[in-house]
Length: 117
Image (cartoon, rainbow, N blue to C red; front, side):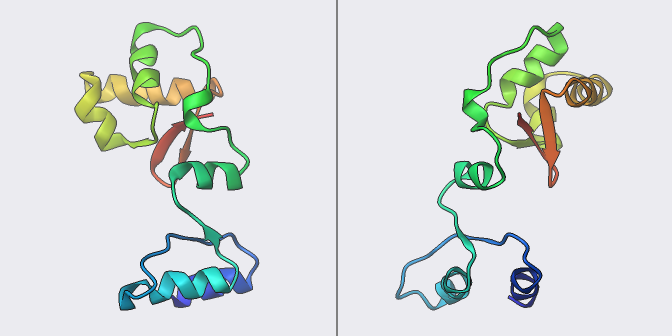
């Protein structure tokens, strides 16, 4: 709560996921919402607030096979560990594909999660 309150005071965007009104554990997010945090019900809310397109609306670019495989897995934002478990590529090839997708302007790395632009 201290970090979130400080971020709000500095004009930074703070996101909060609400809980049941009667749940004492939800008092923190509800307080943040009253103080100006952005109501967050899905990842789409965050993408919209940051001005990014919804990850599912991006059209598939023409890419080499390894990059296409990674691109297809990014229908939803994913961590490097998630992608490693699903891609079936050696770790080095996965990292190369991610780097080339980033350099090509097709994906972003936001907070340790990769997502389509």
